Image (cartoon, rainbow, N blue to C red):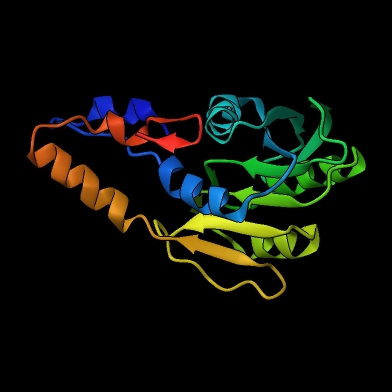
Length: 188
């Protein structure tokens, strides 16, 4: 969730990003007129990385927090009208931010909305919110146990090859960061 945590260990730690796993899935879908969107300012760096690697537009949803489990999206910065959306967040438990973002994106004229959350820790309220959101697909990984959500098309991506590749690189003294160098439609 935060790279800074690496500094609190007495042993070397590498922060592994799931972007290469998501990239492979998303490129295979060939989604036209795609815009990568972050549901809050804190996710801008991640959304910008998806925008760059998928060679698509970029937008941000501005929000205000109403309480511990509820947020309200206030406006969208960027063009989403008649665009397909990849709404990316690193983790969710209540899906309050996600559902609020989906709502405002729809009001702004977005078409299909794909939600990408590497670590979907879904509470019962999150499941209900995702059911009501009417998203095209929830894309997550198996870094946490996943449950089937009736009415929500879900793709659970396996991170095992990414972990195996990182272990091999560490063992061989090679760069782990090179796993995440995806440019102009080509993973290096």
